[in-house]
Image: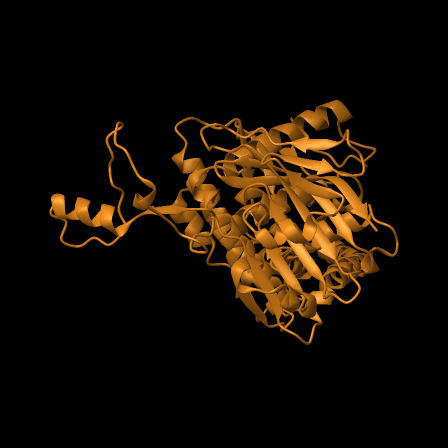
Length: 467
């Protein structure tokens, strides 16, 4: 039997075996997140990664509906789960995508990651259906909850039918349902058994209450840090200006495309088609037209969406601009969000004198330490496997409004940086590496981003500077 344990537990297997088990889970998770069912759903990736992470850590208090709604989907910590079923809907969608993934495989996977219906905790098992795998903490009263029974594979249709039942939102609801099932399926029992059952239920209810009481300060602290990080923008009386970088793109001139369409009798054309040139063909400067402020990378678009969602939840208004449509006077008077690195001239200009700066297309330099730099080894076939990004938060600028920049060397770095600053858990973790007065100081972070199948899948903070 393979066991996944909480590193802090004094029971279970050795640290080396637990490490191997965690590696197997992470490898299985990476394969799932890069598969077609998950490749194009950033929200689904984030949710599954969150559930797996906290299941492995044995942090059941972070796998409750309201906490997930707050940490993953940006809801208020006290939001009404009955009025907003976003967690139940998204977890059900993740279950279906997991079923699609396993059905699409031609070979039996070495490891399964599943989220049983009625739970927000993940279960992990090897390809032997008779194996049971323990996840999370294996000591104390949580042990019965931490055991995942091996479940036979279900068809997608069967899983879809199960999803019609919304998962319970608390331990109390789980116990209530268990009580009903027990009453309907069991034969009349002796008074002693009934008394023991209700004693056990009372104990679990008490533990659930204690878990809620203990986790409440944690939730409050995380939410508070996130709001403090964003307060210079969300509390502003002026609209937030979002400046979006534009990629350098040339288009064929109308003369070239019209001639090709005429020669090939294309009745409906415009410019939205590729002209197949002979390898020896010659193009002149007049055959190309620069398309300035016209094309934005998909990663930058997704970044803007994440930033807009974050500030609008706080009822903050905003304006979107291209760099050539904004003046420095406006930037000095209005809180600003800059999206993009080399493709955003405002980012380049306003951060060029800071400690961490982008240089020479594939390099980030530490201007205070000439021997310290981060190099990006980009793939020659444009199938990137990594990226770097700089997050810059400037609030101590005499006479100037606050500015926040998410700047990747490429679009994946920019997207990962935007996801980072929009993630309450990431911001809360970051605070541990900062001085106590961080909220009133300027800040720069360097992020290293792992990219798989054109998606950022892992982000690591590799350098921090506050002043």
